[in-house]
Length: 182
Picture (cartoon, rainbow, N blue to C red):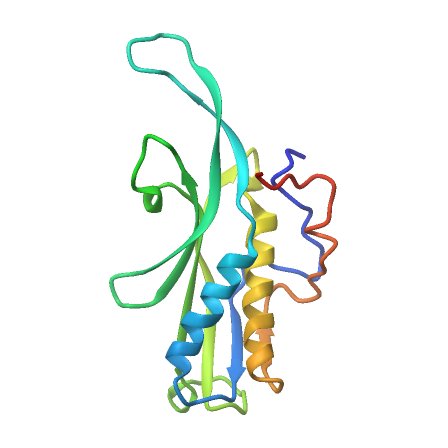
């Protein structure tokens, strides 16, 4: 294990969508933004090794760069969070990412879900990278999704959750295999 992964338990699916039945209807768009910002700040930046070839040289050098969660939106306005590689020589970290999560809130009246809540929030992993048959930076993805659910649950104690990644525990993050940057 390379320090950026954790084992996925049989009862978890970090890639399966989560559907949340949210009972707060007023200003839920602002609440989604607030919860995403909070979850983003809860995922520590991590340091990851990479090789670069400096201009004018033939030999690769080993260096570290930082990975952190950055927020944005897709073309349709859905909120996105990406774990991005922040490189000193690259000003656009948004294009260099390990995984992407889309968060969309919508009115339950038009859905086919049997959830007794006026608003549904869909949390979906829409892109990810795999290295050596392992999901890159999976512990950050687990933590981010966990913080999203906990954030919505703090606002709505009656929050209903359907979908993947249940039974996530903090021992994933506290694993000695995880090395935060800093």
